[in-house]
Length: 317
Length: 300
Image (cartoon, rainbow over all chains, first blue to last red; front, side, top):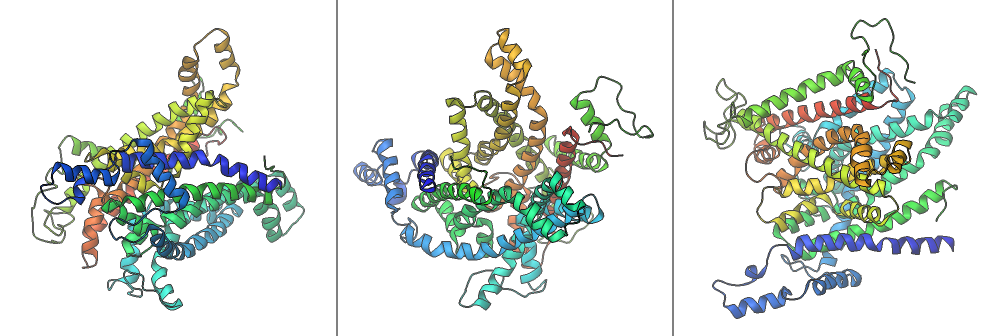
């Protein structure tokens, strides 16, 4: 019951955020955005034709009415059809989101697991050679642009100048084998780029926990490394870790990896968004922005509930 | 923790003047070899960029000077690109673009974050704070590339849409940090004393409280600089960044047609220069952070 009350309160508190996001994106993209009148008209339109199209597009209505329509679209979850392909936005999203998730998930999981492992190793041998080597590599990894990694990995793994093992681009997935062959290079690129940041983050979290008195005492009493890590360090470090992982979720589901999808020609949300940006496809853009905001509110709620689950001292107030 | 440095060092004697955060930081920084070297590399890049601004070199980056895909030679150090432009000139010229974007965004975003963060922190709990926090949350929630596109739509054909978009999102981190610090500083005696003798609130905030967060701002500015350079490359590659002029991102975009044909000079020139600058700035930023952190002691 307490949980339900908390959730409702939290969701209501999220309303200003969603309003803010939709308002700002509406102002920038639609209200002050490009005038679409002349895209829809032929050559040499008459004054009446112009007026008619403007009426159709709703340009002569006051600001609040137009913004109200956007909010109505959001509440009823009906964003209309894409302006460039005519496909309903909801079906476009239903088609592209699974692709993005399938593309991003392996890299996300691997990147975090490896990050924890390397962070732990570096923290355990803090100040030693392993630490210096791992953190030095992380600093180098963080300095290489994602774009460069993508192109370099494509050359190395998919082109005839390198190993030529995987398809260069595209997403023609009918079986597990196809999936693996298309997802490998993007995943490697994601892991490579994320690893530096993740390792640094996990190392600092683990170092913080390891320097606490109770951990030092446990070590002095001879608690073996595995229980020391799981029971005394990881459990206490969960709050920052949960925050980091949870807030990556909207990025994975909605924006996907726009760059990755665009470069490898993978039909996920990221590519759909990019195409919408290039063609000025407002219904798609409005839907993507609004959904990201809603998802963030939900993620914030779930994060707070998870905090409570891992740390009983946190109260849901 | 703030132990005196070991007495037996021969490198530099500890400063004899009155010790402050900054003299201590300068002392620590000078002894950080990685930090000093990375700063040197950054300064070299900066000299290259200034040279471009003053027109000393790379003036013919847009001219067609040779054939298609010429290999490196004495005349064209990195060879030529697909239409015969000199890759070395283009890569050097792009240094200026990077510095321009990095400096403009880092300075303005940090300044904006400082002002809004200080206001939010000083009046925390009031409606000023609520509005600024709401604004931060909202801007944080719009996917970045979409936000850049939205700004570009509404500003029409200006080349500064990218700068505006970066400034309006990158200030948030600085703002949150300053807000937290100001909330801490607000309760100190000197603020109370200033209140008591009737110093106006805005003077207290901007003359007396905000300068005490400048070490945070300095580090944050260097982090923002790197973020801006990296974003510029990706945005230019996607076609929503640098519109006129040349940048490493545009060179990489150009090179995607070339690498599959086996010509890597363009890609390598842009990538290596970009990597060098980002790496040096990252290391410099880390060293600065360590030097300004009163909890760390200079290592000998």
